[in-house]
Image (cartoon, rainbow, N blue to C red; front, side):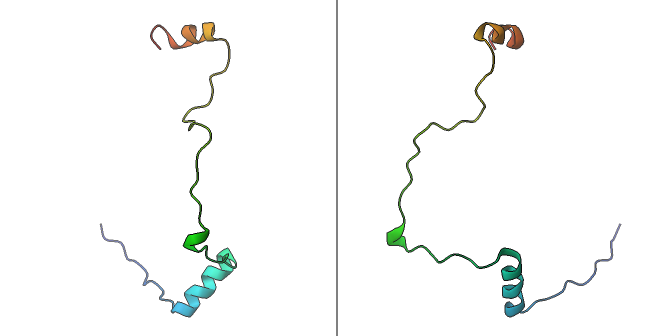
Amino acid sequence: MTEDREPRERFTDEELAFLRYARFGELPDRVCPEDRVELTETEPRRDRPDPAGNPDQWALRLGPGG
């Protein structure tokens, strides 16, 4: 099944710059490489939320070995 596609509108670089400005506003100044700092995580990554409830109840919900 072929689908008729409308021709895509082409923008000039100036028009694209204006559309970016209209959508995102003014961009902040660039950060120089000498001003950058390395981040150090202070807490371990959390992939899951902390379990709720009593640990004795977890076995009832999860079953043996769960």
